Amino acid sequence: MNTIMRKSVLGIAGLAIAGGLAAGPLNHGEPTTTNPAVAVAVQADKPGVDKTKLIPHGVQGKQSRIDLGDEQTANVKAIIAATKKADMDERAAVVAIATALQESKLENLGHLGARNDHDSQGLFQQRPSSGWGTVEQITDPEYATLAFLKGLKQVDGWQDMPLTEAAQTVQVSAYPFHYAQWEQQAADLVAKHWNN
Image (cartoon, rainbow, N blue to C red; front, side):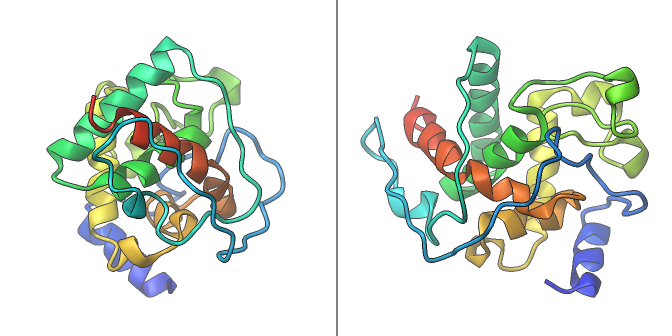
């Protein structure tokens, strides 16, 4: 996606670009190698989930996975509920959950003091100074998800993009390839919780 299109998309979303919209990932390792030809099957626990929407292009690169606690699982459910409220499909939930996995490991983070990237907070590490909302708003999982999805809706053709490109276009991270590593776990979580 070219820079002009990204800036216009973000302008439409009503978000400032200066300094980046969201913090970079919490783990600052090397970018993952991407390979769009790699496809991994999604294991759905519940009937009725359209598996073809979860990972339509296959995963890119090596996948990461973490164990989730109760708070993180509640945040997954909040992201899914907000995605439905925004009238978006399972793929949008996968993109949102993968983004939150990268940005916060699905923990609703407050200000981290010296470890904070500027004023980034919440599940998506959104920044009040970049127009995402107040601290109270961006640390509300529903609000934060709806703000992320509003930006995603403005990305022309996001459904046809690799997950990491769609997420990066909204987030403007210093580590754009890191979102890809969470696609499989995000898809598994959507498959498990979409119909709950």
